[in-house]
Amino acid sequence: MEKKQENHMANIIFPDEIPPSAFGGGSGGSIFDMAGTSCETSGCGGGGGADKWGSSLGFMDLLGIHQDFVAPSLFDSFNHSPILPPPPPSSELAAVFNHHDDMLLNELDTNTKHFHQGSLLSPAASAVPESSEVLNNPATPNSSSISSSSNEQPANDEQNKTGDHDDEDKTKKPLKPKKKNQKRQREPRFAFMTKSEIDHLDDGYRWRKYGQKAVKNSPYPRSYYRCTTAGCGVKKRVERSSDDPTTVVTTYEGQHMHPYPIMPRGTMAFATDSSSFGAPSFVVPQPHYLHQHLQNQQQLQPYIYTSPPSLNITTSFSGFFQDKPSFINPNSSALALKDHGLLQDIVSTPMRRETNEEEDQ
DNA sequence: CGTGTTTGACCGGCGC
DNA sequence: GCGCCGGTCAAACACG
Image 1: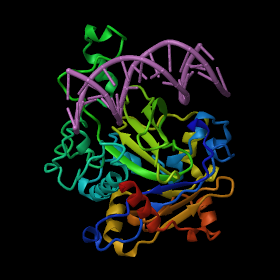
Image 2 (image 1 turned 180 degrees about the vertical axis):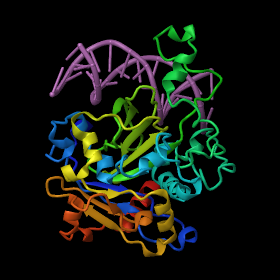
Image 3 (image 1 turned 90 degrees about the horizontal axis):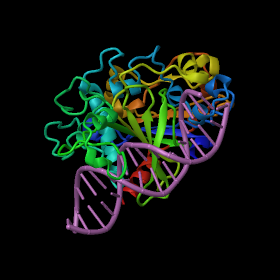
Image 4 (image 1 turned 135 degrees about the vertical axis):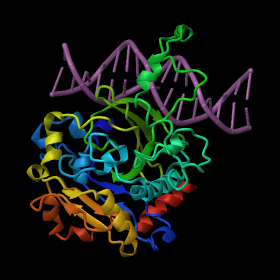
């Protein structure tokens, strides 16, 4: 179902509620819009008839995240993949993620308990009960103190499940023998909201959907995905905001301990050379970059980059991405559209807040 | 045939 | 203890 989303817009919404006190009065929204067409269009997937892959908008691509080009990318930072350059000091992205957390808590508390609070603000003090979820600070790979549990654990549930087989569990069904007397540990989580008509944004990794559940108080189901890379237990949940159907909430759990998979049908190629496909090409700021901009919060300037008509992708940044994203390729479509004056298309913060408030209720 | 999705059932945590 | 609910499993199915 979500397989064939028509996606024509993908606005990634990052938290815009950084406390002014924290960032010098950041009032701007942390929204960046990505209005794109579906990958069915020529651009996506490098022309390969990407069905499954094509169905999900090249999220990383949209983000202009090119692992081989920009590292650590946003997601890599989130996942602090070992294959990437040393993760940033926790402090740098910490704020950002806390920011996310706060926002997400607002946005999602009603639907999930898994969003941690104050993951970074006070790791130790995070009285949040969840042993692992709280730790959710993907941006702090080295901060073992924060993520005492999950990070060092094999990112796979699979392993935990198969670790100890209790026969009694098989009375009804050969289901996964989960560890008893031991809370299931969750991987650190990171979530963000996306303005998109497609639920499953392609972030460069291969995901396999393993479940879908109806979300309480929401007409939209939540989908569960797992990274298909062998040994990688990273999961992600995707759900659409009930209040704002155009908003998709994606929650990543765990960290990829592997490079991007070789994407079949061009997605990867997409990611490695956006210029060839007209993918939007802004680069998610690197940690130091983020940090720097967080400090310059006063000048919140949302940015919107739009892909060429073929892709119809519009992306805007604001909030901690307030500064100009670095363009990977000046010839990219992003710039092209930028020239089209689409940068004016800024999603206002109020819009975000509206959503927040609504969901808070 | 390989890979991914769908979907009903099951499991475990948690609140009452 | 019970029921709700989120998360997961896995068989069946779809698709290229």
